[in-house]
Each structure stands twice: as C-alpha cells, then as structure tokens.
Amino acid sequence: MDISRAEQRILHLLAQGGRIDIEKDDNRKIITVACITRDGWRAGGLDLDLFRKLKRRRCIASSGGRPYRITQRGLVLVRSQLDNQ
Image (cartoon, rainbow, N blue to C red; front, side, top):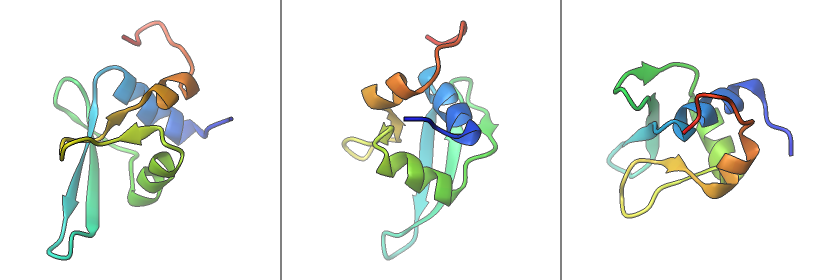
C-alpha cells in the first residue's frame, strides 16, 4: 500500500518516538490534534483529516487513554530511513 508524502512525514516522526496528542470537547468529539516529536516540539502538517486517515488505515493507535503512537502496521508502511530508531 502506498502512502502520501504527508502521511510518510508524520509516520516517520512517530517511528522516531513521537506521539499524537488530541483534544476533545465536552461531547468527547476530537477538535484538535497535535504531533509532538520525541524532543517535545510540536510538528506541523497534521490536521484532523490526516489523523483520521492514519487511524482508518490502522497506522496509529491509542491504548488506555494514552497518546496515539505508531503501530506495527505503521512501521511496515513507513519507508526505512537511516535515523529511524
């Protein structure tokens, strides 16, 4: 399965140890998403549509109320690069 350049960029950040933080409103609906790098910086390029696409493809997942992280499937889809951990 081929993924877009934007998806590739976000998955690469997550593979290095990043996370996706979400913010919900009172009705438990997601209103904002933010990709946080392993150094604690906020990375741009992630919007709600891209988040939903990654979630639908099961590239990211959350467990126990923790932030979203990359899954094994996401690691397979991301192209290997020298600085991935």
